[in-house]
Image 1 (cartoon, rainbow, N blue to C red):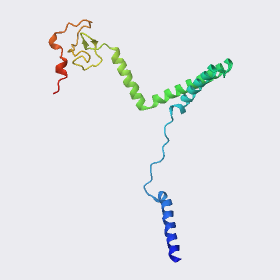
Image 2 (tube, one colour):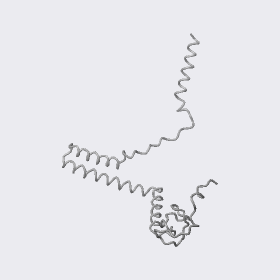
Image 3 (cartoon, rainbow, N blue to C red):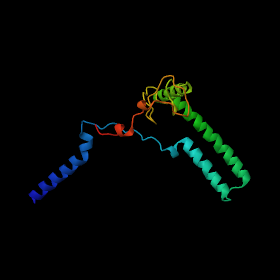
Image 4 (cartoon, rainbow, N blue to C red):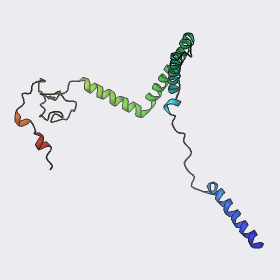
Length: 166
């Protein structure tokens, strides 16, 4: 009987240690961080889903025209507020600001005429290209853009040479 009591005590202590182990550990896990909201759970997503829902309800005859106009005006305002708030948050984020600056720089560069042009295909979007990515002709810095190719045959890289294994 004493052996059974000792065994029960050992099992009880082992169970207690197992339960208390997370509280006794010195290496604590990182604090819990909330997950980002799904797009449908954001204020913008909720407002847009409500707009879709009232459109559907109107088309199926569940909403009168007056109710539809009232709800559409209400949720359109909510959606616009959410979009404006999201836009202000995006500008405050440094990564978004870098992306916006890069997009603006690319658009400004695209608005300027390219210095390289293919005689056959026209101007190229790649600023550092030496050969045309479409036809393979060597690009000249001041080549006129014309639909008819007047390039010498020697400048064209034959496809058999380009595709030959090294």
